[in-house]
Image 1 (cartoon, one colour):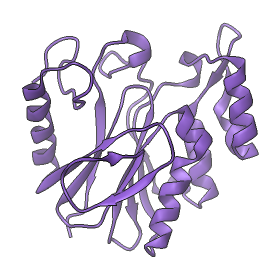
Image 2 (cartoon, one colour; image 1 turned 180 degrees about the horizontal axis):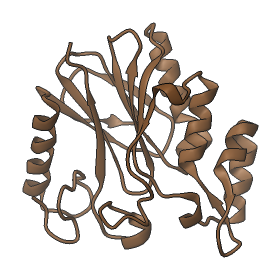
Image 3 (cartoon, helix red, strand yellow; image 1 turned 180 degrees about the vertical axis):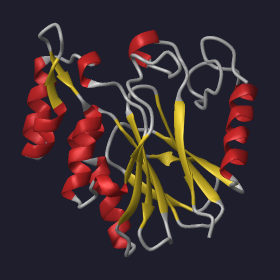
Image 4 (cartoon, helix red, strand yellow; image 1 turned 90 degrees about the vertical axis):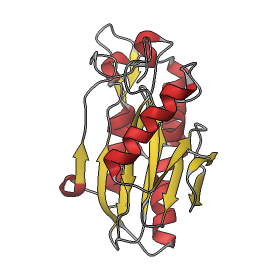
Length: 222
């Protein structure tokens, strides 16, 4: 329902879009999910993980776990990685937002630890579109921070060289390496979408600046 530069299914209320259009777009997602209500993750670019049983905006965090049947949870992004996780015991689902800061602070590991505390392992993982490493040049000091903070296998996957020779970060590759450390291999991982900066059908903050946010949503039906 959104108009340019947010057309058409912008799901973020903080980017300057018409609030009525955002509400209508979120309602479309809720109906597509078959959910009774929808929790929208408010990204904080950190590692906080929260649980909630109520719809609407979630407390500021980059991972939200839901156990209530019929309650969907939605993570937003426009270059950052979004993930949907389903516990292997069918009792909980989670949505995660992970940018480079989330990679450094291991928000994915935090979400999986929270699921483990509830007695669940990763049963299924969906990884949404994100900017690729070739399109994401970063300052050298950011590379240092990733190498100093992340496990060696994660840093090795995430740190790349851009076509023009600059250092770059492939956050999605780093996230996949973090998932692998928790035993989530390719057999349970589904990939959706490609590079947000290259695909004109996706929102990209790096490409456009003022733009919308796509979302990745999951609901527990039983």
